[in-house]
Every structure is written in C-alpha cells, then in structure tokens.
Image (cartoon, rainbow, N blue to C red; front, side, top):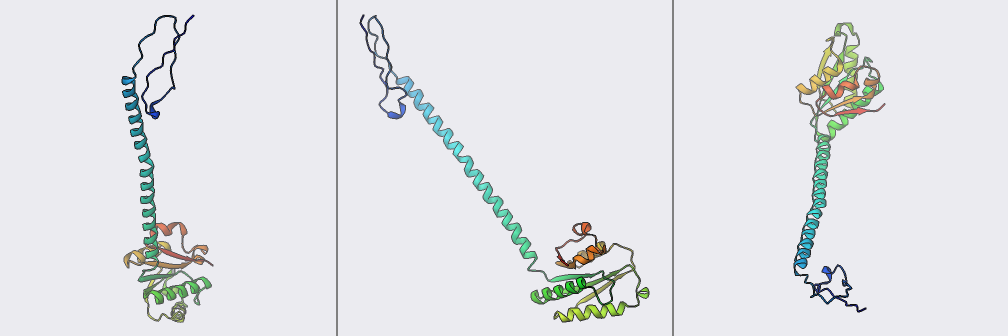
Length: 218
C-alpha cells in the first residue's frame, strides 16, 4: 500500500502558525495543495480585533486610576477646608452653663483655652452665660461675672463681649446654637463637663451648632 503525504501551505509569519503541518493519507491520487489565503485573512482580522479589544480593556484601569486620583484630591480639599476652619477663626464663643460662682474646673479650662486661641489668632471672644434662673434669684451672679473676667484676663484677654440668657426656659444647646448663628461665629469652646452635668445635650450639638465645636476633655 502506498502512502502520500500532503503538506499544507501556511503563511510564513510565526504568529499565524497554528499547526506545524497537516497530514492526510490516501490510497488514491494526490490532491492539489490547499491554499490558506482566505484563512490567513480571517486569522489576521481576528488577531487585529483581539488586539483592539485588548487595547479597549487596558483603558479601564486608567479610568480607575483617574477616578482614584479625583477622589483623593476631593478628600484632600475637604481636609484642607477643615484645617482652614480651625486655624482662621476670628470670633469664638465661650458658653457658661456652670452654676458655680467661682467656676468649675472644666469652665476654667474652657476660658483659658478660649483666651489662648483668641490671643494667638487675633480673634474676638463672646461669652454667653446661660442659666435657668433669673438674675434676681441668683445672688452670686456678680461673683460669677468677676470670676469670668479674672480667668480670661489670666489668659491675656481683657476685652470680650458678654451676653446673658437667664431664665428663658430654653435648652442651653439651642441657645448656644442660636447665638453662634446670629453672630456668625467660627468656633465654640466648651468643656465635656457641661455635657456630663447634663447642661448641654451632646446629641443636639450637631443639629443646633452651625460651626465647629471644640470639646475639651475633663
């Protein structure tokens, strides 16, 4: 029995070769060689389309990187705005909800901090004294006013604006927010002592206070 080997003609480019050779055996007469011209075009088109798809796919990571950069810049802007808010304030509010005529430790600390910040940044201070009692029913009221002046003076701050909100029946947190909003204040300085003593409601601070609040730990 005679065997005839037929070599298939393939393009010479290595990237197009899919098989080294195709063989067929037959006892009949030889068939003319097969041409791969059409197949070569198909393979070329397929290869080109695959490259195009690959290029399109490679674009997506670039978009992701760009999106991440935009988000990072947005976060940096938010941080810079927050930092600016805490370094460029020009008007501070010092709420006094303390019933101690000589001021409690937390109130004294808040007064000293407000004075130091105002002196450093050239800011003004407004003190708001909040008490549910009327002035007539608070015999040590003047003693408390003297204590406030003394502690602010100790911090190097002599002049300040004084507001008295006495006997109004409103929540101290709402009064603080109202004053901060009316005077367009930049920062409220208050001790955590006011929150622990239930004079100020921490849950309402974010709702009523329109500016940053500096809470001093005990």
